[in-house]
Image (cartoon, rainbow, N blue to C red; front, side, top):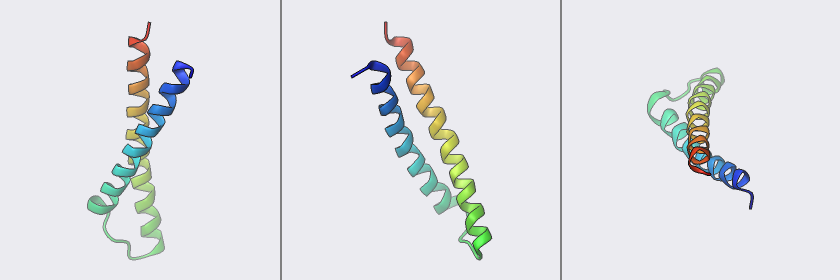
Length: 71
């Protein structure tokens, strides 16, 4: 398999796992239980933003680190 494709798939899997863990953590510990549909939507938006931001950063960081080591 192509090196870039392999590393991209690996980074995507790692990013997905990190996103799932972070979204669960934000919803469980930081966002209060929703009282309305709007509160639920805001909570999901906040957890999605935080998990997407951090998992994207970690995924790109891992790919760049691997590419820098690859000859």
